[in-house]
Amino acid sequence: MLKSENNSLLNISSILAQAGCSVDPSTGGIVQPIHLATTFERDVDGAYSRGYMYGRQGSPNRTELSNILAQIEGGKRCFMYSSGMSAASAILLTLKPGSSVLLPHDVYYGVTKLINETPGISVNPIYADFRRHADVADALSQKVAMVWIETPSNPLNQITDIRKISAMASEAGATTVVDSTWTTPLLQRPFDLGADIVFHSVTKYLSGHSDVLGGAVICKESNRQSDLLDTAAKNSGNVLDPFSCWLTMRGLRTLPLRMQRHCDNAEAIAEFLLHRKKVEIVHYPGLKDDPGFTVASQQMDRFGAMISFRIVGGADEAIAFVGKTKLHKRATSLGATESLIEHRASSEGPDSKTPQNLIRISVGIEDAGDLIKDLDQAFI
Ligand SMILES: *Cc1c(COP(=O)(O)O)cnc(C)c1O
Image 1 (spheres, rainbow, N blue to C red):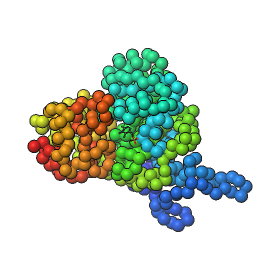
Image 2 (cartoon, rainbow, N blue to C red):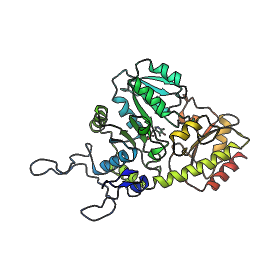
Image 3 (cartoon, rainbow, N blue to C red):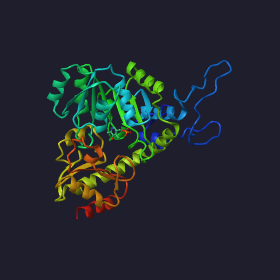
Image 4 (cartoon, helix red, strand yellow):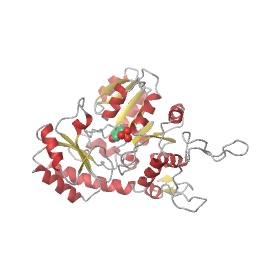
């Protein structure tokens, strides 16, 4: 239950069903207009009593979207960036050059590329297996400024115990960031488990229709670090445009329904894959034998809708399988209504550490029976 604008307690679904639906006072329109204005009128005395001055500093669609994301995530402040990775770079830029950041081995490959290849991002990455708490403790015995959690991880669906790792980070004086892109605020609540910052690629489930590129950073507290994130966005112009904010708001209205269907479908497909002879292993934390099942059951409401599996063989067999699907679209990315399938290693490029026989599916909201039929015919 969350506090609504008028302070009554509402379920998150009720808040989201009416996201962006505040009545426009000048027309009575029940959906917020898209405010494309880049500049705003001053009062006769030179003040800005309506709160807006210039589009880079702030604009109405961005304010509304930030407010609702902060509210549903349970944080104090939210900032919107022009992509997930630009949000990630804003987070890393709040650190002093040379600071150490502890990351899991199976972190989203874009984060590794951001740290290794981007001029001006000068943090020192340290990697550990976050499922081995002794290894994390070892790594934290060096001076670490930030611990970057991603759970479930991309693409191996490894589960990190957020409560445990963020407690260890806090004891070591490090800030905990959780990349919650795969779970949304509906399936996992990192702030309740001890995280300081939650990160989302808005490109995925939050907007939900493969037509927005965006990122969000939500801070549990209003503090110096959140001020730096705000400043980074405004001074660099690394902000989400009004139309993308509006489309994301529209997507949010159906997020609870979509997530329910995504998860129902994924559970059915993971079970189906588990029993195929040509499947070596299925990585999905909702399967009872998955190594992440116990922790996932404790910290997730449901297990999400990303599945990866390894096919018997290598890259050739995996690419051939993906080439035979018809209903699943062959494309990277995730979190939209349509199901996407990919040979993950070749999407990540020549430096990829992902197994060559791994296929990743973003399970959409089509009929589960139709999706299973499509995969079934691809095995033949
Ligand atoms: C897609 C993704 C990102 C990057 O977000 P972009 O919007 O593509 O820049 C980061 N983390 C995870 C887990 C993702 O899936």
